[in-house]
Length: 110
Length: 119
Image (cartoon, rainbow over all chains, first blue to last red):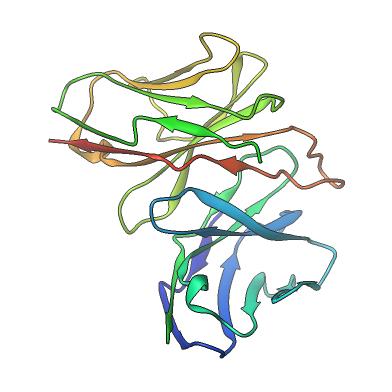
């Protein structure tokens, strides 16, 4: 079945860039998603990328997709303490349910 | 901004008891989902629901689980006889079902979750 893998933890200093990585197995995935979960809250959609794109930029967020290697990354520029959260990568096709990774906990040191 | 609401936020139950988790999806959404996350593990898909029937379910969603849309607003997940391994955070989500294979993304809006603790 489909699988999505992420590293569990990332620590950066405030003002630095953060790069969160994700790999997936389903080559038929048409969309790749990034969700953010803050303490006590649900998963909030940050951004998504269509599989025929290799980059998408949205303010401080840059998503890179390497479809050949099935590798997705999320770069957060000028990381702030408010960016501390768990970040989930997910993949999906059409109306099929999304498959999520286990999440990467981002800790931002002041 | 419209949101998905879930109740209760936390429920503690004894093994073998029935539990019902409730969700109010966004009003104009047509697809509804339940996911769960056992502490430290992946967010796992349980079931999706459309047009008053299950459209997709995972291996986790066995005979102990059921879903229902009893009225026009609520979407419930019932666990008939809880087990210790059912302890998890359960997330409800909804989408407007405008996704298609090559056109638009399936954007899910999640609730804050219901934490279930089975003793």
